[in-house]
Amino acid sequence: MTELIVGPFNRVEGDLEVRLDIEDGAVSGAYANSPLFRGFEKMLAGADPRDALTLTPRICGICSISQSAAAARALADAAGVEMPEQGGIAASILHGVENLADHITHFYLFFMPDFARPVYQGREWYDEIVTRFTATKGTAAKAALDARARLFHITGILGGKWPHTLAIQPAGVTRTPTAAERVRMNSTLKAFRRFLETHLFGAPVEAFLALKTSGDLDTWKTGDAGLFLQAARDLNLGGLGVGPRRYLSYGAYPKPDGRTTKQGLWSGGVIHDIDPGGIVEDVARSWMLGPSANPFEGLTQPDEEMSETGYSWCKAPRLNGETAEVGALARNVVDGHPLALSVAEQGGVTARIAGRILEIARTQVWLEDWVNALDPSQTFMGDFDVPREGRGIGLVEAARGSLGHWVVIKDGRIANYQIVAPTTWNFSPRDGSDAPGPLEAALVGAPVGAGETAPVSVQHIVRSFDPCMVCTVH
Image (cartoon, rainbow, N blue to C red; front, top):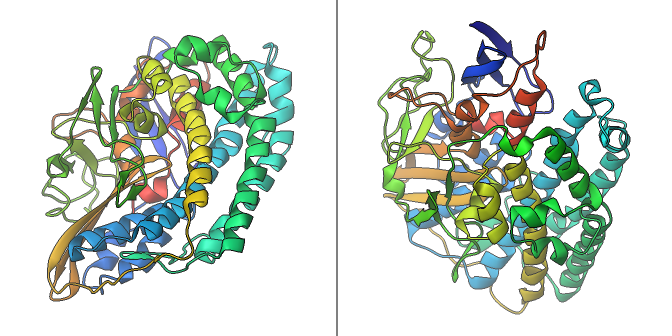
């Protein structure tokens, strides 16, 4: 057996290293290391609870609205308040725009450039992918970045700026859009739809949404999605990087009338209800001092000695003692979309990327519906008073998966604040029973060629999870 350290990874938000055990030309064991400690949870201790709305979005410059939404939901839960219907719709638009932009960024800038590597030279699809996706030079990036920038005009209207807007509050949103601004947002979404239908899908969005099975997916030939699927079939990415096939979602875009997608845990073909009380962050193999606990009781005490029992600053979240994969694929599986359910049986790289592409199409349609539902004559913000005592949970879905904030308030100040981010779930280290995290499990079996120091198979698997390491080690 030989050992290989892969990292730091480029085109990844934050720092990541993966230690691999290699036997007979394949990965036999993997250990994901988040080598940076940041400590936002410690910064929040003793602060005014409203400071969470300002500080937690600074955890990340990619998914700051996700953090803002989770913080607002946690404070609302602690105070026992709900957003007005129109405030919930506007908050969902802000969050949906960010998630949609994240998916586009991941596909065009983070994931697809790996297929332009010289190792694939001579493949039938290679020349077209080199033209479209070579990092900093490909023709796809310009169109994607332009469309992404224009999409964020909606955030400018509703939130004033991006990232780090303070527009989402526990009792609603800070600004009521005008009828003219609703027209502008609709125009922006029409332009983004043109980008999707010209570049990503090469066909109407609804045509991709109509796909039901992995067999249907195999027939998709158009657009950049078709180019990816062609390469994925050729490289058998459907069988590469298979995770635990337990999929968790908190349910996306909560509003007073319910969440847009369902909440639950998919395992063995069955959807199970989830109880946040069953979530424990295990610290047995983390550079964190105990105890392993539910986030309400959890601590953020870094092991400054970095003892040999640990190998990551990331804790190991477990639901009822088991790992769970989170992300766009997980969301759509739990929500019962037939295409997601079909590819989930494979559970590898192709399934994760297909899940994100599917969600791009679904989010575009949701955003169009939400903007049309905005009513400037209605109330967008209710009343909110910081409770002297209380605790609350804010559960949302970031682009990368399930995000939770837990807050405990005593004497009007934050007594404890704990965050479990999507990449904390997916890139967790082993736990006290030595069970690997989802990425670690997915890497086992990945082929490693002679002389490879950054195996391309490992790159594909890691990027299929779309890690955000700065959120991981918040």
